[in-house]
Image (cartoon, rainbow, N blue to C red; front, side, top):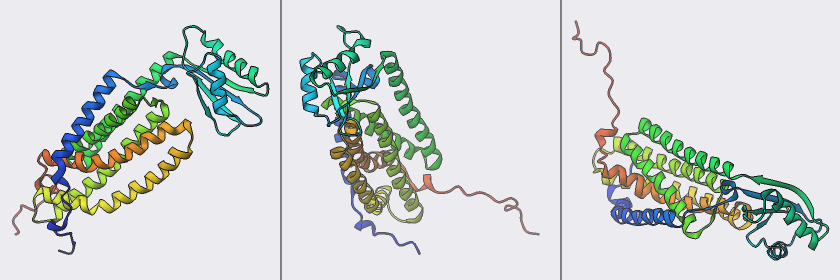
Length: 314
């Protein structure tokens, strides 16, 4: 054959650990579901509703002093962070039973101006709980729609066993990432939801690359069991997977440490998602396809009979 492949004996035996990986993933999924049921998610103001206040300081803002001033003014739960520059500050606070929503913003601005008269109020916005409920519902529908479309796409392009493996890997990634935010009680807002959808795209891209190589090798390697062919395919895509993951992680580390509190949750979800997505492409998507009995016959192209081929020559 012109197509030169690695020797079957020279491939990394990834699938040797598939049972251990399945047990490990099952424990993580069960732990994540338990935490989501008990602790739930620490919903951000985008989902729960609340007040957002933007103020500016001509000489630059000192966040620790602002937090201390707000704590003294009976707002210890206020989230304070820079917004775009060191002069602009964004303050977010959840609804309160003892104070009307329309008065929270004015009260906070007055408390800050009492400590520093140079404080300028830029804007005050209120997100109602009805808007938060609508965002929660639409966000869940967005992820569900994405998973269904992926299932249909992979089933049409490859084979239904690969489709089930891909969706299993995506569900695995989403549930465990949500579990991380639930266990650590990290704030879950719209940026984190966007990161989850990005994790789905990243994991799917990795899974499709692996699936495409497996299909190609099933058609080209004449000898070898499905287990051996999958190990060869994973070994051949290993360099690509490492390079892609490392370059992505470098960018995300910069966002995580230098991006500021506003996108900290976004960077955290993506960093964890890159790790778990790479792992699931190998040990969930491929292992599920193998467990479902994928074989060479399933991936061979269908021969199309030409018109008149069965007619005897005159």
